[in-house]
Image (tube, rainbow, N blue to C red; front, side, top):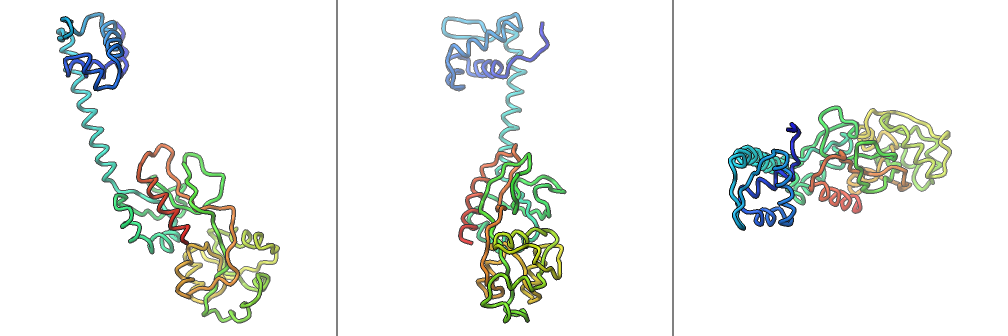
Length: 296
């Protein structure tokens, strides 16, 4: 006699027929035909080389070995049902972990957190600061919000939210502002530009999009994180480069100016999810983020 387990479909058919006392009712519950249930039962009987049911006209009763199998299978299926229900309950109630670089978190997510929690109350958002959210140092998040350019990393499903746009920003408090206003972008070639070491390609990308030679750029003070760079710009320390959504509130409040506008880069705002992750909350979050970025 084979020691291999029979198919799960055959065991499901048997469990339903034994529990309901009817092949027809088992077929109805499992949304298959009467013949399909009968075939699955024959598979088990042939494997055991014994009948599982005694048939009396249209009715069936369990044989002794059928009763033994019912007791074993019913307990296993009850455990599976209970475990599945528990997993579904925990999954729907569990916090949604969003990995995000600290600069995006501080400058864009947190100012919108009240609105996000109000609009998506089922999310139960838990924010996880990660400087490289697509290569997390801690536990893998449910999703990662990032600014990134293709090709996308393997193992992630990427939802493109909006193209990135970057541009120079400067505070009205900057001592050298008067010589910059009413001049085109070439005036910045004479500036010691504030920059961030976390994204050294930002100024060159903007220069290329503005038809300026990248070799003409001069760099001044550098900062380890974009957040520090933008705080330095707000403090009036010089001209910085920034993604438009991260300075939107500062522009509206007059803390920063963007005299030369913004240019689109090859990067995107993305929400990335592990490919094996299946969570209905992701679609709602993607739609919300796209709406917010469109308004930005």
